[in-house]
Length: 179
Ligand SMILES: [Zn+2]
Ligand SMILES: [Zn+2]
Image (cartoon, rainbow, N blue to C red; front, side, top):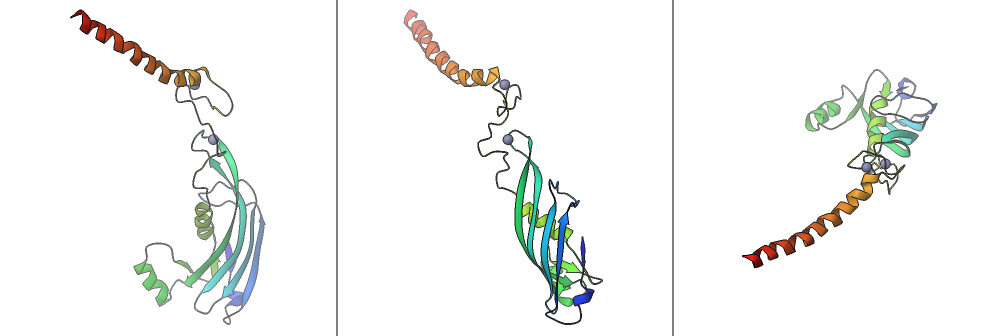
């Protein structure tokens, strides 16, 4: 997604608004709802500033039960774009391997900025619900949807192991006694 900056190029301080409200395909991100942008694009002299809110929803896979779920998010964009051939951009590009956003040909490209900001807004724990019960380690059943039989056996097996242990001890001592 490009925003033309030719109309604000003339002098520092000029700005324009840029809105988007609708479907959008953002490479590398599974958007689950419309993308909403209400941006201000400003000529800040040697650079172009892009500021304003981004609202959307993404489809994520729960790390516990692997079911997809929709995660709404809102981020405030605030990023500067340097002209690609400026000395500052070149020296920064040498110094920093991480992203300095650049622009050329009187247009600012927003996809990479949006992608980075959306990924940064993902929840720390990607869970469909905070108390997602996940999948049964034995049969793979989604424990949010059903209680499988092995889930009780699994919890039983801890007690069973304990029983075996307590059961196991006496025979050993019996053997010792027999010796
Ligand atoms: Zn889950
Ligand atoms: Zn199971």
